[in-house]
Length: 313
Image (tube, rainbow, N blue to C red; front, top):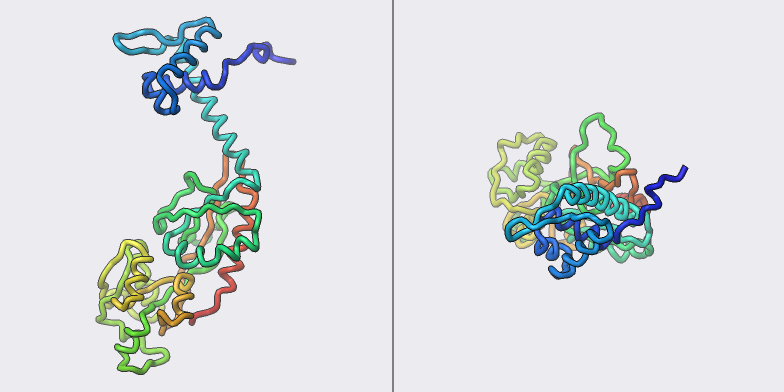
């Protein structure tokens, strides 16, 4: 049976948006600013809406306006349904292969691993339009993006879930510049030197990964409290720049220093050891579980690229 409500003509979407903005902001001026319209344009849309419905929606109150009972009812309904419509439109757009995939990842990973491989990604997935954005180390959320790359520990015994793809295990190790290595070894290098030579030295560290040195030292049989922390940096990328110019010994995942090690800008005398963390791709899902249609293709490419990275020790 067809509802009689379907025969009632609906006001224009423009008028409803203008009135919803008025109800949300409480004034015509602020509503106009939020919609990038003039004061007069919003006023005309609200007058048209009142004429079409045959009821007053606003009334004067002092030097301003207030919503009538009918106006408050319509404003609440318009806000709810326009919000729902916007969410559905965003979800429908996400199902298009042509829509951009917005990916957030730590700035250090973006600069040192991802950007050098963008040409290879374009060759492998020419239909993917990728928009990259740098997020805080370990702090990026899924708000406004299709996926987030991050290093994280997964809860023990808990499967990653459908929206979390594990791309590879994290491996970390100390790195230092070639000049610093030669200086500290008197011109000759040991392979590998005893890791206890780092005791008493001020070690570069990053506030975004405070457990890195402790994770590594425990796997070397060295109690973390025996280490001496030196200069700290807000981001891993800053730490690596300081390491490259010889300010001290840094520590980083092998993914981020593989090019520097291969080129001889950095050395990793003790190699890299696996930690309890993984590099994961967390995918955004809409209310009905919709994800970007190329999300799994991107995850597969990332996993394959990471797996092909040569062992550095």
